[in-house]
Length: 72
Length: 257
Image (cartoon, rainbow over all chains, first blue to last red; front, side):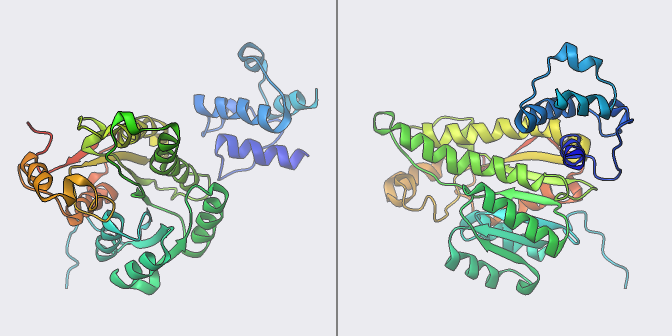
């Protein structure tokens, strides 16, 4: 479950060259962009049926925060 | 002997070409192979694809697959397999397409569906697959969409074909913005009338009188597939490294007047 989430997150942000960890601040990834944000929103919706409003998303800081969002 | 400087070289580049079994796609394959590219050739027409493989240089170095490009899952499989075999992709020529001359009163929703499926959807989703993480060269590269003079200029009976070509023209511009951060350049090319198998039976080419009129619209006469293939070499090569979001008009002067 955790590994699948990491893989999907890497694909959404298009991270090829490094691992992701729960404590990472995902907006600090060099690959981060406004399109990555849209890809994550789409991925959470398609894969986990989780819809997050922009205001709510802004509060999420780490990969762990995103992971917790799909547990709800 | 010192190696000759050639900014148009395609050495060490893996180039995907759709619609490679005939016409402009075939000529692009031949010309790109002469410029040193390794090719991934896609087409539904098995016999035509085999013939193309016999015409390209170093035929055994290239990869080809008989595929219906609307079978998107299969496209993903084939591209992954080709990347595994040959390495990452540096360029894509979206040549596959169909043409028609059809008056408004004869068009049906199914006609539009078919033309958008084949001319627009397949190019878009092949591009999506080629750009998928792990498939495209980390150094970037070049993608070319085949628009047409008919995508921006009107001709009777060309509304459906023109709509699809206009869509590809616009598509290239937005994708150029989206993919620039990966150093992937995206351009379109707008040929004038080129005599190829997809249009040789259409009235403006097949009918001698109409052909004369068509020729008269082109300051330099009708084009050959080589004229388009040469332009594609430029767009694929490092010679065009600062060119993205452009539409290269190669039309013998058709749109000048």
